[in-house]
Image (cartoon, rainbow, N blue to C red; front, side):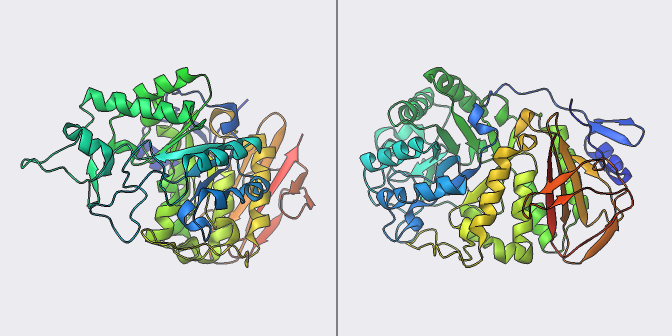
Length: 463
């Protein structure tokens, strides 16, 4: 039986303004859930950690063969899904920088020769599968390079301005926008997706700027991909609920990401986090998945490393992405505390020296994600039940509980030491083990707790 969410009075008022979907019973309230969407997730999706692979910068060679040597390490890290940034040939016309953007695709069926050959990539896929990991690749369906195969062979498949010139979306001058009013283009793209599943044995796709492509195309594509005889995973680079109705398993938790940045910088507090969770519960059905992250290729290269944006709160926010409902992401180098903005259009390199000792930290988080069924994504996970405190604007404490497990997490989301009492009591009468220290703990009713700046504890009870 799922618990109801417990929120404070200030959020009852907020929820009435943003959703008018709250029901009240005493001091408890439950956001009215939207109707479940119809995407059925593969069994391996629910407790998965996804890992973003930047092949160009991963090794000095920047090749599939060189990356393949890291697969056992990533398996040991606890990675379940490998997401490769675009592996296709990059356009030359209007190229940005020396090597160009991965997202300026010249040939959807091709392999970037800088990375190696198709056989090299197949070897990576096969080895990853042997180790029990799934593999997805980035698909850039919204646009191609200006010298793409499609622009040469099918110039009528592109959006053009009044003068007949192809249109570049936003300020992305190195790419040309495709026109999805063309049935032939749609057929081509779906057949291309099928090729990567059938012939290369991929397990799905991360779809770039998915909301810029018509939703009905994605719905049609997913329906056909579902007929191929294997479970797949589809991740939308978007934050649009309708995309998860029929097409995608997961989308981006951008709003959550920005709130974490704001909290770390002292510009936001637990109030905004709680409001976000209320809003999400009212707009996303229970069986949808948000991908939670503190960094990715865009954030790292353009907005700064997690250490630049979050400072001393990095580990705190990383832990939060694993225990909040959704799927956590680890980006290339995050597991060793990479504090360097990787160049986007040039060759750069990750320093794999784990000077901050973060690898073991992430191993514990991925292990917790797998062992604690309460942390499963979507409908299989347990609801978040907030435990109120005397420091509610700084302390975010909550339980997630099912028939066999109970997790109790306490986060000091501030740069100041906090001493407080719990005013909620759903965490009581339970013997816990703290997931990082392995120490046992049972809380008392009037217990006074002190947490250092950004300190957190995650407790688990197996009933």
